[in-house]
Amino acid sequence: MKLRHLGFCIIGLAFANASHAATVAVPLEVEVGGEYQLQLFNTDDGLRSDATRTKETDFAIKAAKFSLRGKLSDAITWNVLYQADNNLLERYWVTNKLSDALEVSVGKVKIKTYGWHRKLSSSATYPVRAAILGVNPLTDKMAVDLVYKFAGTFSLAFVKDYFDPNTANCSATVDKCKSWNGYEVQKQPAVAFEWAGSFGDFQPLLQYASYDRNHSSTASVGLRYKNDLIDAYVDYDLDTRNAKGVDASGKAEDQKNEYSGVVLYGEYFTGAFTPYLLFSTLDFDDYVAPGAKSVKTNGDGRLDDNERTYSIGVFYENYGKFYRPYLGLAVSTGNYADAKSPGEDERRTKTDVLVGLTGKF
Image 1 (tube, one colour):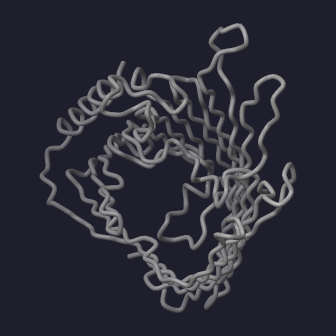
Image 2 (cartoon, one colour):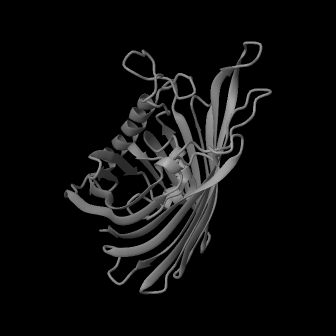
Image 3 (cartoon, rainbow, N blue to C red):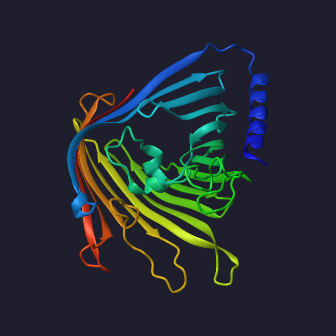
């Protein structure tokens, strides 16, 4: 069954049930919210070759988002999230609360992948994000998401499958879009599962998603510890992507590429100040044909393999969540091919000094 047909069926059943049960008119309720980040940064970008290495100081609006949410009835709510800085309608969905334990959401939603860091963070609230998030194929997608609350929450989402519209596999001259790895998409929905547990201060997390017509998958396992003083978590993320290829005999075969990474983050609430610490990794194991040698260096100026990010900083809390100044330092490193010594690697580093402001209302 195609995703849109499945979605229409669930929407019809859910809303028919809600309209049958609702006998009292509910006044229109709309809430407006937002979040933002402004940042002044000094960058010493040593990830490029010596001839193109850059040093600069600049000011940027890292994010400016507005949200609207309202109620259509006691059970049905709607949400819209808009990126003002990119002029992009980021997410929009309708939720029907079928009971205290069960609800269904339909629309373009945040797919539950890549651990606690992606679940809790956004471009507006974190000065530095983990590099591994940049390789996530299932970000904001059209989906039907069923959520059941018991010892935490269980989520099962039927997701519009992944494809890259910016490749030759999907253009105006191509009749059927294909994913980056050559498989046709849109034949069936991708599926994403999540369990976010709740046991006092500890919150375990398990996520698994299958996409590219079940040729590729992503999995995450994490643990969060949160109380009045500490909010910390650790994630391990693994994305396995099978490209469509042929073996030596000409027979079709899946050719496995793996992205993996760890994210460690922690905040300590002291009152006026909240220091934070972040560490993340990104490693890529590409498919290697028999007899060939794997490439284990980054592309010039990029961090797409063997990446390590270290970041420390502090938030000033006296103004509350609406006005949260911060000061931070972020260092990213990786191995690159040594232009002066062919066949050898060199370690390159990018350093950022960050002064900024985040806020939510």
